[in-house]
Image 1 (cartoon, helix red, strand yellow):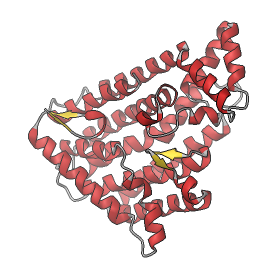
Image 2 (cartoon, rainbow, N blue to C red; image 1 turned 120 degrees about the horizontal axis):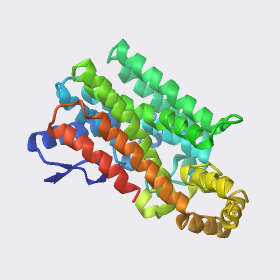
Image 3 (cartoon, rainbow, N blue to C red; image 1 turned 135 degrees about the horizontal axis):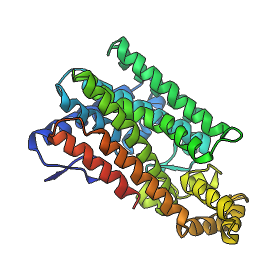
Length: 336
């Protein structure tokens, strides 16, 4: 049994392992090539997060989904480069919006070069992804464009907040489906589509990716509260400090409104205070780590991961399917 990809995913079939490893290595080369510029400063900024590493979760899904057709088809690796470039571009922009200081264990681009350079570098990566995408055909362009629209819509909905009368948890899950689920779904879709898999298989893998993507982000929400910076690669409680209501916080507020327990109300008031103060932020983080809302968020993560697993049921049994199922377990394990 060999370990490959994010979360220590184990691949039991040697041929599958070889295909995945070769595919991911080709993606890495493609990322470095796509982020080169005639201007050395742009190359350095664009490759900042590429060289910092990362789980390459989306390219891995492209490689696994491609196993349901021809994994050596010429569009497979370029499509994986496209989804990872798109993901990286959103990280540059997210860090500006969140004023994050650390990303993947290194200084964020906005910390090192300022907000303007970080935003423009993200735009540069989007442009390079579009160039590659143009060679993959009009259907690939359409799929990516729709996913990108959903991604941006999710980001706007997060910024705007829920409308009057809308359940905040439902609103947030819709936000995640757009911000994260859409691009993870496209990763699976591109892998299957570029490999020439049957359209039914493409649809199944797309549905799987959507649910897995939400579970993946929910696990990140849990990690933002429960982990230290060594585990997550970024400063714990970043969303908390910025007042971004992730699922553990939303579950806390839901419980406070339903039960009215003094300790819940007091914690909500603490979260509503100025958490730029390090001592106050540390108290809020410690209190959330011990609160039942964090466990509820873990259960929500498990639910979405189980829905992703269930979506795979129509696919024939094979090593690639087993690896996709194991990814569901790995996402849950990340959330504890």
